[in-house]
Length: 274
Image (cartoon, rainbow, N blue to C red; front, top):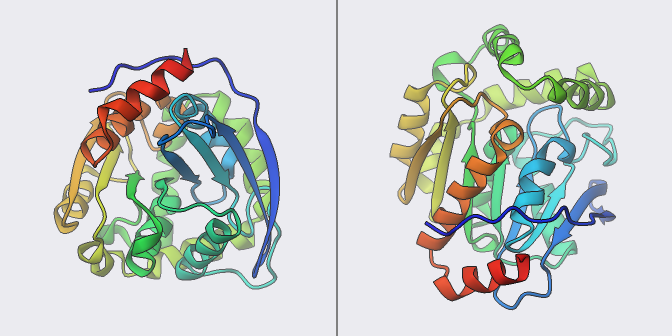
């Protein structure tokens, strides 16, 4: 496992990029001049934005370049009049990667973001090097809106208090109608059928105390993916990327090393981080 280094907080750049569905806002930070350094793309969950991904993004930026877009309809990105389905969100992500000239990134998603990445990996397999699915939705044994909302309410007291203000602002920006309709699209998404079609290395991550994503669903999902390993982050709930970012980044770096990076690349990144 690579040794972990706490980086100095980087200076983020805020970008606005035009895609077919409108303008997408994103945050960029990290070691973009490192030869061979990885590129990480972080994708947020339902109703949220790139803001709650920043604890993970800041730590990963010691090892490579990190990009965190707001999907169309969320955060500071444009609000399409028509509410996008999971495949349409995945296509928007693909268009944004093209506009940003990003090739073969490691794509990391939480919750709905992980669900979008699954669709992306199936239909755009040449566009990413590997995927990290954190709190993958939606549990096929709980495909009812009220069940999912109930699980979300159970998760709230398990998350850090400082996530609450970020979540409240992001949900307000997205709007109730957009959040509910996107949840409906997520519930209808045939994710079980998609998982066996993924051909890139995958790390499936679950927080030990996550009430939204049960262990049985995580085990099933990881078992369906041809090249997957799974890990559990102790004492974390659903938003592992916010509440247990250091533990998550350690797992991501180990996964990166096992998935084809060389030790020399990680060593080069760590020296630049110092």
